Image 1 (cartoon, rainbow over the protein chains, first blue to last red):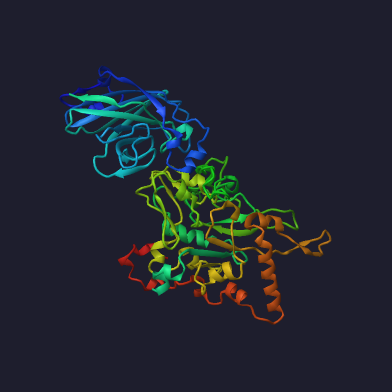
Image 2: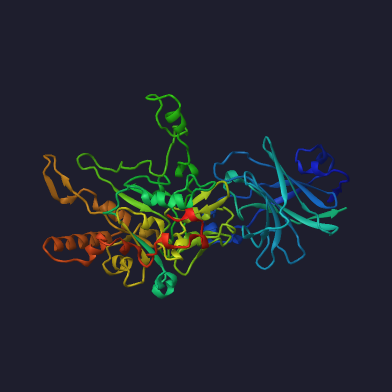
Length: 198
Length: 358
């Protein structure tokens, strides 16, 4: 996938409903549940044994850059049933060159950066993830995120520092709040998505 | 500060509380002392880290005893449970104070929660209801807080490592690490972890650790007007909590079958006799059913109550009882364990804001 190069004012890209995203090709990314066996505590493994989660099968992903900031738009179909306690959420996972594990959102000793947005949370988070739900908050390079719920489809635009690399590899993750999904109970990309930063 | 306050390991590690349910008058002073000290910030309006339940009752969160959690008796590992919802905790609503006091509606408007009438609930919503039929109705009060368990399933359930158990046994949360996943709330069998919906973190009793660390007793203990609660180190053989729990075995854990080895203990309530239909006394039958107390405190409750009665009989007969003297707490400071420092004597600015110490 090629991240569209934007010249001039790119601020409208942060709006997931912006017309500009219509001209930027999106890629269908297949998702799969994070394995139950990889969940980090016995409590979670036991409480969720036999209970489906991470059933969101696909997300549409598009990217753009103005040279300084990287914009990633993630769109997915949600059941849109409101839940009083848990909220829908999404994340962008970055391959950071080490021996990384996408299916488990990083692993012990090989953390992956994760931009995390959750509906209703005051601000998105920059996390380092070393496993499903095993995250640490990072104070710097906190991303921005804006979200739009159009009937039953969420679209979220994340934006943050583009970095100096000409290529990136991304993964995405989606949490269905109405199914009480949180932490490592997510649908995550089956494969890394190569992104050319023009 | 006393040496034992500053050196918990030397005095026996685990901090413990003992509530004497025969002295608790349900005034909620412990609840309010905690509330004004710790839960006045955003997202904390509905939170009561200490709350007094009327028993039997649904309590708070509503129906907590049926929400599961705890530890498997075989493995000690956490068992799945329900995460109490905001509605089940209830409260956090405002009242129509302005309308009643300044609205010119004298005699017409009455104080009423500004929340939908359906499913209203709050911390003491079923206070004084109890159970039983007149003239044998009954209830008692039971203060509840985080039990700072020796087998803290909340800690085991957490994926981010936000919870830890200190050397003094307090189970504390690092809110910077907490992601608000709420597995801890599911696993806790006592349902004494709240969720801050504004800041997206779990929150619970912190054992007043900033006070403990300077030798001041927790607010729930220091403020109790009924002298009903003791604090101290459980293995400190000189402490009241050790004697009540370990030596005399009259202070018992709540729902020990939950398997988390709690460190808040209760002296079970004695009971008036039942009345027969002709209003004569049935001296054989306590009004609070023993099987109900056993369901709360386990089979040891029978021995504990028998011990209490035996000691009372001894004193009535002219004897002396160290146990009853301890429970009566003639000297208020005996409740405070090693944490006898008067907060008024501290240089408060050096460790915490002035209005945070009561």
